[in-house]
Length: 393
Image (tube, rainbow, N blue to C red):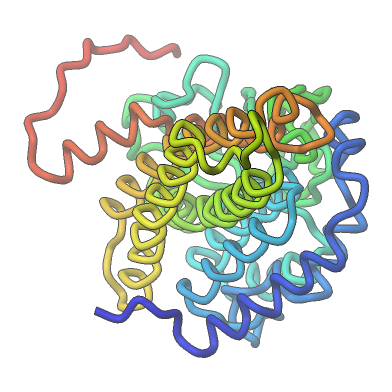
């Protein structure tokens, strides 16, 4: 088995790392404190080509395979401590760009993909609702065909990039009684009549990525903006989650490596009782555990790229990686703070922010509990017993 990155992927990793270290370091602490999206950083990433990595050249992208794209995301997490910005990029790519690339008509691809790749449009995704998060296909947002339009009514929450977006891939049911078979995907431009974006939702971490609610009140969406076929939204959503669970974790690989190296340097310099603290097993063992987690997590993430690049399904691999890496990122975040002691708890050392950002990974793109359910189902265990839910009409 080959563990080295392909030459093209390694070259891009090195280039992105150099770019991130030079261009994406400004005022992260202040922007995190103010819950401020960094438009300049977004524009720099767009100009570098990050936003178009997996998109074919004919639509304005670079045509990279998934393994190479994962390498770029890992390098971003390693070289840039603003994980909120990187999270916003991931949300844009995997829940907006990829669904349009995969399920969009030729006209939709030509209209939207070049602007998504250039950063002119920021993408968002409307799926979760106040009463259905993990049980996403119990959504109650309705879509009713009316002539050449669909009329949407309902509400979405936890919408990443909502305050800054220009384009939304949103999901609504065209047949509530059909469950997931009634879910349909739509492309909405920000100025669509009947679409309203709520106030900012403030978060524990990933604060430099905006979040808000969406409201649809007799929101008229042209039938030409149907994404895929009516009733085919579940396949579109599952596709986006498969890509997201793999790629969005890569930034945490980079962050974990950055944390570990920071802890190694600190443990060599910081002295207590006359010796560098790295000589004490209680400190050294924490850093060793950080290394073990990183080495165990990395192949899990890259296996997703290996599978997808060969045209294979990677739902199981994505769920396994999501479960393991999200727990590992939190554990390593805690260990890094403990190595630094009181200094690790202070904002200026930036480790407390890494921990806050890591906690979100156990929730977004499907909670760790949901990943266990997915894994159990895909390895053939009997389905769990879930009481039936009476749907709202």
